[in-house]
Length: 173
Image 1 (cartoon, rainbow, N blue to C red):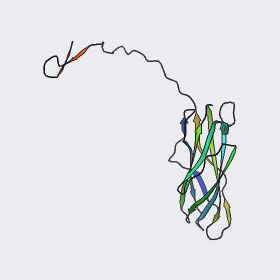
Image 2: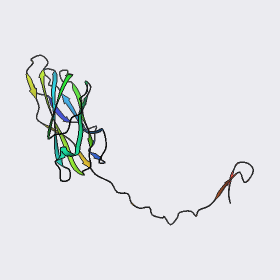
Image 3: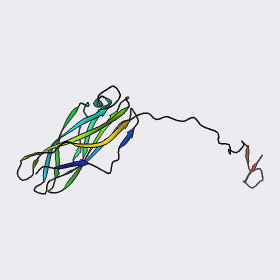
Image 4: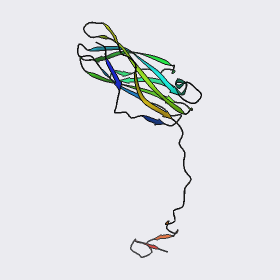
């Protein structure tokens, strides 16, 4: 049977500053069918959304996949990104987590990833895949800092002198 892929609920939707390195931009749980285990051979990550005037993949670079079997080499991000995997085997009804990492570039906006798994049944060697699962919402943007404001109950400025009482205690001058 086909694997089930879903957004990993332990990772919330994200707000990320532009020009941030090695950010987890998606996390997925893959479950093998109850009929047989799964050998994952390929993962396809697609980029969705709108980041400024660019397509979403233009605002990410060094896209990579991290699994219990290891980390893929980073790639230049495209609309659809294919990663070959070896060593990721999921037992019958078992699960594995696949995380998606990237560096953000300078544009602001929103995006998300989708994940498709391609593999083979462990016993039947039959090719299996899933429909694309949509991951976390990603907001890339710059924050604002409000100017400081004086609170009317702020204490007056004072000088404090150490040891003025001869015992190491402080006394206001």
